[in-house]
Amino acid sequence: MMKYSTYLIFGAPGSGKGTQGKILGAIPRFFHFACGDVFRALDTRTPLGQAFMEYSSRGELVPDDLTVKLWQARIADVVRSHHFKPDIDSLVLDGIPRNVGQARIMDDIIDVKRVFHLHCPDRAALVTRLKKRALKENRFDDANEEVIRRRLATYDSESKPVLAYYGPALLKEIDATQAPIKVALEILKSINGEN
Image: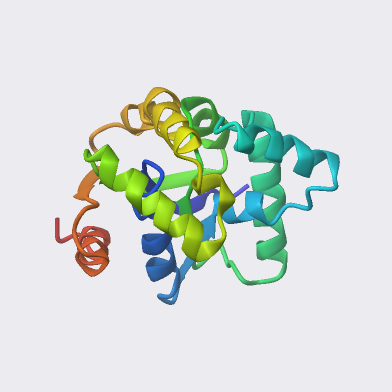
């Protein structure tokens, strides 16, 4: 099986992963896939949907096998529909892999070209961003400050080690507190081999 040529947009909740993924996904030959959108679109009446909601509402990560299984099924759908053409398109992922276990499972599926780490050391700014997003986009998982802080702690303990897993050669650190257009420019320059 051919591995998908992949760029990872990585960072804490509220760091702008989705925004940057959408920008890249608007460029021909890039296909943006936001794992969080897939989770939020799940039918909560199904057992899988209920399992995802249970973990999400507590600010916890969904188990790796469930997450990767759902991701693989959705990627297969977009390949079959020809929205994503893996022989000529690059995949832009945000929200997966969320931990080293998922990264290991996905090693046989994705060929990671670059990991863009959108870092934002000011946690208060991230909390504010998430609360604004919750109101603007009806994302109730972002409305409760206790859940937000738990999600940030989960990111630090479970997700951040993914950066070390891929190593410094693939990593590009980007200040997420800059204007989104500046962040996008840094990502594009890196993809183009300029930095």
